[in-house]
Length: 262
Ligand code: GLP
Image (cartoon, rainbow, N blue to C red):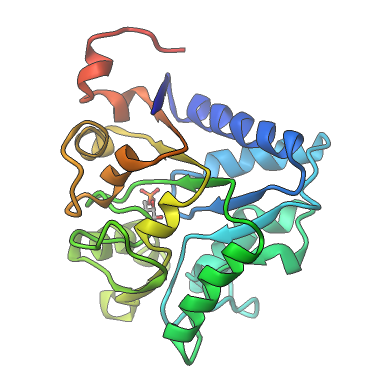
């Protein structure tokens, strides 16, 4: 596992975008797994800037990690009132780049048959040859995507009940600002499994801020456990890269021992 520590959020985002752009330039039809949350927004802004300077997404295939169960994009509503991850991706990245609609795959939160949908999602990933690079954040409870504490480390795409900590975090970060009550927030999500994520040929995990420092240290240096599903990064058999800002890295044993920050 490569751990890169950058001075701040801006530098972390630039480094992550360069990493992603390098793959796209090397393999224009690469398959990228995208993530939502506050963490990758700076990376997406940087990718949009790079696109404006020529970075070509026309052959890139996208698979998103997760979607709230019960939500789907509704462009007739203002962005704040449409908290679907489909809308997030559209507003934060996809509408600004030349990715083709038919190459975008995001779990369908409105599906009437979630089990069938989840199996088909896994099949579609296989049909395109698997994910080359999966971008990941980390939830406050250590989750990857919506694989909450207790999820099996070989889980596949499925419906997952959100933990209280995740509901609290995501309510504060997104729903509250839009004036939603806590009860209006979906309590379930469709999520890629940890097994699905580990099948990606490479993973790129991002985290910033001191609030994430303890859980980042648990995931990267603690025991591999389904209580911190991001600790599965230690099991990844391909190329695993982590880009952190100094605050998120501050509780890592290996970071404390070195001062190499760029
Ligand atoms: C959500 C997403 C995760 C993301 C997490 C962290 O729960 N399902 O994929 O990593 O939020 O979000 P943030 O980056 O806002 O801290």
